[in-house]
Length: 387
Image 1 (tube, rainbow, N blue to C red):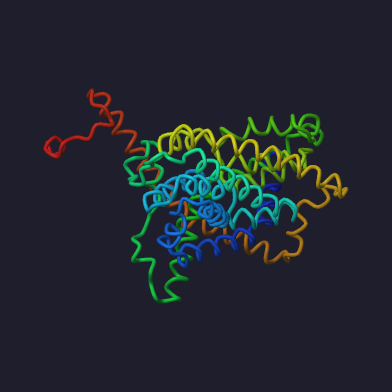
Image 2: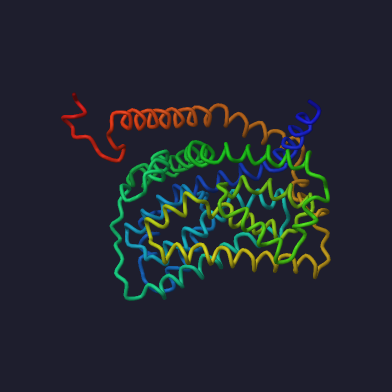
């Protein structure tokens, strides 16, 4: 019982430190959703020159999309004329970074990691996009992807996101845009990441309570081996950029080098088995190979570089972790934490329950069709459905 209480207290402490920065990130992400014109973005990314890759990598940095949510956005960009290189760059920089994850990185880690994270995302995205454009020259690509082109698992994932018509986002009322932005931040961004964020907090609490202080220091205290171990651990894992941050903070406090933690922060959100499978079906084998190779190599190189920065400046990592949160008054920290919990209970839990219900219905339908000897992927004719 004492250990459970200790886990809750450790998780609560991390929530207090990060809540205000999470709310700030949500507000910015909501404003971006209403003030940025998707057609204008697609226009800039449609050129086959390297400039479109730089733009795609840069545009993806502030957007709060996970490796699942970025797939339908990338498909939409490709459908509207974005090049393969620009699409690849967007798919790397977007899940690896975001205004919400940058804010919580500043709160729970330190300024060095806060800068290194989006810089690494931008560089790796740019390199991958340029390589894709260079290797893909002369190859005719099809920019008419539809939602039905997505593999079944990711198509269902994408169906969980509400995508309002374009005309709904082109309101001339600034007040209405702000209102829509807040609605988007709470009902879309926070509902997508809340479950993973609180899971990350609890896992960080478990690491803080149960893992000895010198456990990770024996194997993950720096060097190429530490980076490779974290790479193998992070690639198949599904976790969003924001939820991975408290875990990284807990790992660093237990002796993991900041460079190894950065590898986890980069590959965890950008790669998982589901997204790699979808990427294989949407953009092909060559692009998937470039995507995974560049992410892995860039993460290791940036991890080694970050460790050298801390060593060169003789910065005591554990002493600076989480210091940014100390500038926020305790009452504001508490209010922010309570607000996130209330938003989760009022807004997010009903959405999650609805999605779980749809998932269960889909599973029941598949099982019923399998029992009847009908493949779930075969669409039934309208006359057959009515009988």
